[in-house]
Image (cartoon, rainbow, N blue to C red):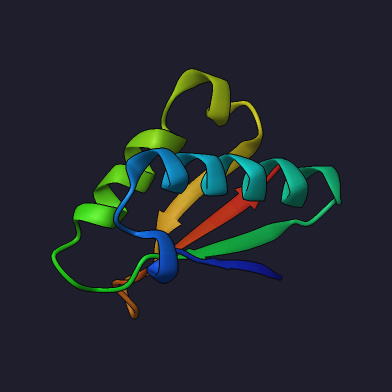
Length: 81
């Protein structure tokens, strides 16, 4: 399972969007069935931003489902088609 840790780049929304887009494209293209994005627990602003970005039309076509992990509030799991 591929993993992307957003802790080092959490301050700039443009860098976050670019990292998430690149990660999703690469994971989808490599045939991965599941990938995770680590946003950290914190104030949940980063997770909210990432979920909103993943919910955009141009991103939704690459995955089947996105879930927040209840046991670990700082993780997003992406299931690909």
